[in-house]
Image (cartoon, rainbow, N blue to C red; front, side, top):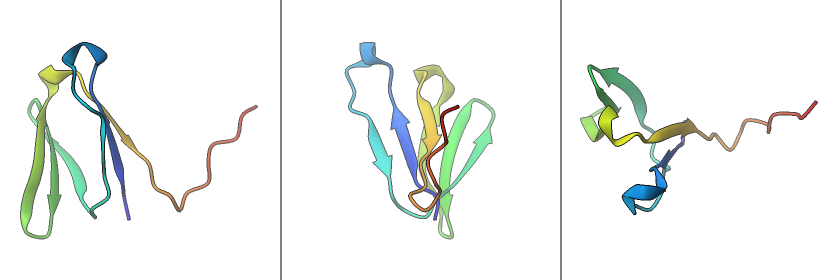
Length: 65
């Protein structure tokens, strides 16, 4: 199940948050849209400068070389 970490730039004063629901990420124009079988759940405009990272717990951590 995909999980997502949303990180806002520090100057915005917003808390980072994690989405643990089974949502798919798509992009439409300048928007990142999280959807499930019922439709859109969250939408973030590109202008916010957020970082969206997939953080699945069942995947092994990357190995440092």
